[in-house]
Image 1: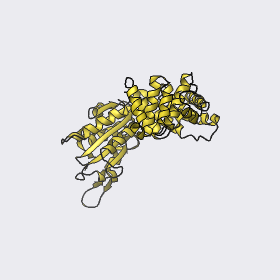
Image 2: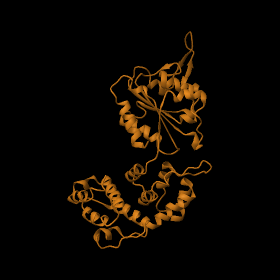
Image 3: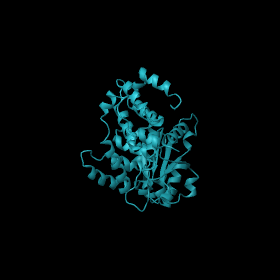
Image 4: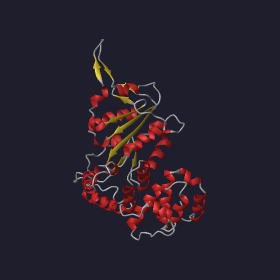
Length: 338
């Protein structure tokens, strides 16, 4: 399932007006660095939870079962356990709370036993938690060889597993919204998603959505040779070389103002990689004021390329949809516009 489908499923489940809507515990599993944790946090925020107020995180792989008990207090006739602050804030009677159990598939068996008591009985050790606790767990898959182990059936039987898969268009939407380099977005579109995830546990650096985001932070002021070495440290040398090679193409593109000044007469690129590059640059430069020229230019390209360009432009500047040029374009492209 892609990011938006998982989020939609979780929000719909937890929004039901029934007393046991929160009894389902989701276990999002997928390759490392894909965005599982971000999806869980986003789902909780969509439901109105606020981090560190009524939304908390517990990394099961870095804790011991005794951490859930807290500290013993020997004042009085018998020992009482004083719970950790997190669980005190989720105590019985406080109302709605959200708990994200991170890296559950990397945890030891003893921690699974403790976690099972949380997700099924709503107890942390001897401490009773709110009956309005909403829980999502995230973990990697054993087959990715990232340190994850087989999940005990006791835990699996108490959770609903959702398998996370990366989606190119959703990643591109996110990348554009975060103002990633145009070349990076269009490189992945040109590769049709093949480079978004390239994971091999025997390598130090692997291509994942998380490591590509790190590549997006590489200073543009560095020479391309240094940018490539830095990118290799995040996504591996092969993918880094491909990306920087594509990025060099961007430097040879026609000047965007020249394209918009002469949209019907300027020469079109013939190579597919250059077409992807120029479409990305035009989308970033699109506004409601110049959209007539944008349409005139993009209409000279293949349907898939022009539709993707216009969609990116609209997401960047929603005012475009109110222009006469957009209405005319949408009518003319109704057969290919989804």
